[in-house]
Image (tube, rainbow, N blue to C red):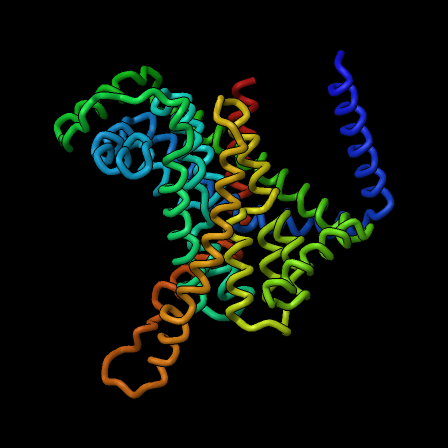
Length: 403
């Protein structure tokens, strides 16, 4: 037994003991934070992600991912140096939100569609906030400003694209260079590959459906656990004033950037959980909307330790390392903040000014899309609990049946 391992054991034991004591000393604060995390997971996260998780499992098993991969190979390989199937992961990750990209990447790695280096590249830019969260929860829910969602979404997704282009150079030394020529797009080959993939599935449809539901709900239960734990952890660290040192350091950085020091509390909370952090940023009255948007973009792109822990847990069963993902999140946060600064005038100020001008045409800021996402978010907050109950009941039935 080495001294380093012994030291780690002692440190882990001390931290766990101190946290347990804090939870017992401050039970009300821990309970309130737990309820907040549980509410977000129960009403929004579970019902919004469950359909995507189940559907993605079907698409992989029925060969649709192989079909998409063959078609997208001429585009994804030169741009991001990942297989064409990475296009499926990227699209599903952006549509459903984190940590879907990590789950889909892990699944493709297990199926042999990705190498370890390609998985590390893909997971670095396939995890993002979904439009429902950006427009519904952040823009309208916190800022009461649907038009701001355009700026946040554009900077967030364009930042993800830039991260993917940067991370294409990751692992260049370890990866063997291929002398094969890039194959042209072939619809017939894509269909044949999809058919071969489906024929490899010898299990009946009922078994496939049960496995998809069971696996998806297990992942969502893990996500809920991380959300609740980090919501409580962030609250406890503030109650015991452990966050004061970090908030002081953040205040110094904010002062250097000519931003209000009142952002320090929201940034510290956002480093752990993006929902709480974004809400606190929206409540800072001493800052301009541009400053609030810049900080919020950084928090959304960084993902928070809660989401990063979820990704680390999903990747733990593969050979895909977590460190490249963490570096990518830091890059994404910086790039998104810069893009927000650059896009704020053309995508927000100019469009708002155009609305005040008399014109016979409909205003350019027609909030149809924003209204759609807001309606979806409201629908989930009202009916999401019923979907969660049905999903958990199904999972319990499948678990009992298996045992």
